[in-house]
Length: 362
Length: 99
Image (cartoon, rainbow over all chains, first blue to last red; front, top):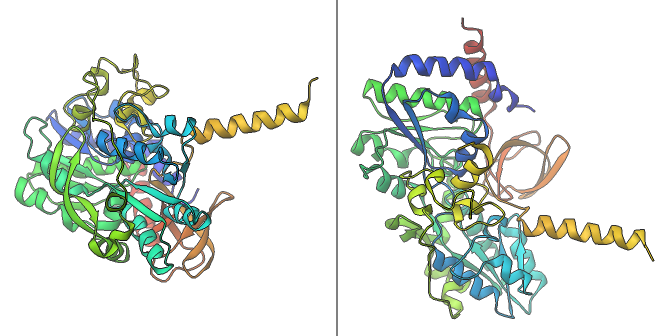
């Protein structure tokens, strides 16, 4: 496939790994990736097993479903139980366990929960079902938020009054700030997200080298992209000259995608937001602006939500911060599997526990 | 009595439910560039290896047939910069040839 096979060249990967070993020269360095697709790619291609032992690759909170707190899932479940509501969602949300139930269980019991590929599909469901209210679950980072903003704008333009979004969008740079400031994690540099950066560009990460003296490279998703990015990062760390570099130049531009950003900020505004296991991070979420509140499910539906409960044994919160590995969890591979997930990190296709389960022997 | 038609229909429903319920349509970032083969306004069709997919082009400036697009949740989020891709590939080949 064009522009793909070249970035999976095994000999090139081996050459880069040899160079990484030489540059590292025994020094201990920890790099964190904060994109679920990077988490999966690093596991799938076995990159963690071919880099030197003194190079620690940590997975951060890059999976949007995984960082969504239980109370949001519980609210979505409560909405799906209502007779006149159709809940539309991306597939990864379906099996995420809430406090007592999941959307999948509600669907089995007759709730109208529909999986869509795009927000525009959810909007079509609303158009085709005028007697029902359609609630779309707005989960995702800056890559997804503009697509949901576009659907809300389209609903307003077409005067569709039965389309709503239950919004829990998050933005990545404030979370990276919280992580880099946590000395327990000990991050030397970030493998910055490829597609979040496609939207926001490279400028929003500048505070990381400037205020925290840590390295940043925006990486592509193929194995050669990742090993090149690792080499760029360790060079920055070893030289003591951290900056924001773009390895994924074929897609990411310094200013990002201004059309998508404009749409996103026309409909949403920043707010404080809770991340599962990390807590509330200032300015790390997006909420629907007042001008578009007619489409805000939070504003328009009152439902009774069960009391939030968390499984005490589940360590998803620590895994999301890179403080624990999935195999350090008592439930991992025993009670918590992709078939019967206990924590969100095992459910999502981008989750760290799912990646370790699928691709790691540990 | 055994009815192959009914059994086949039930198998189809089972497979549909299985994949439907397991969340077959996930929105994980699709890093594979797809080629734009047709569009009208903001609605286009992109293709890779014979697989075609509807794509919304609202976020793309001046889309053209033949553009390679990065697609996320049904929206094209960027055109692939072929010049930069070729530069990447040149550097990889250089590395490959190094002793």
